[in-house]
Image 1: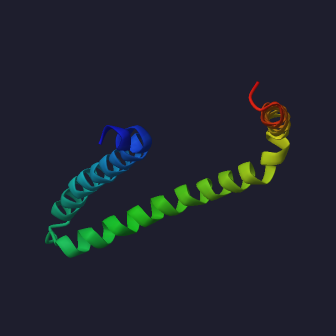
Image 2: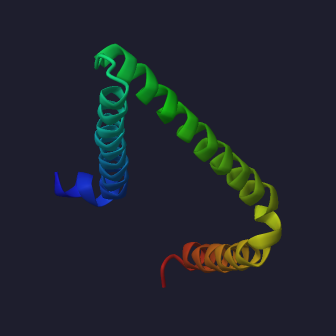
Length: 110
């Protein structure tokens, strides 16, 4: 279990934050819905609230997902430019490590 949270802890934290924010949105939107319905002397209907809540949720998510997609495209599109030096350094290190391993195998570990 400890190992699971070490690898997946950030994911669980993000899920908890997302769920908390979504529940918070629901609580505040419910309060606003009830207040609006009372101001207009209209009945409070769960189905109407759920429709409004889901509409607001999808509207918020649409803008967030569009931002995320654009960021991903930007980062992935330019990753070679941004990380070219790091990749070259890593290749040099791997090449040197391969040379050391080849020498060890040739010398029989002497």
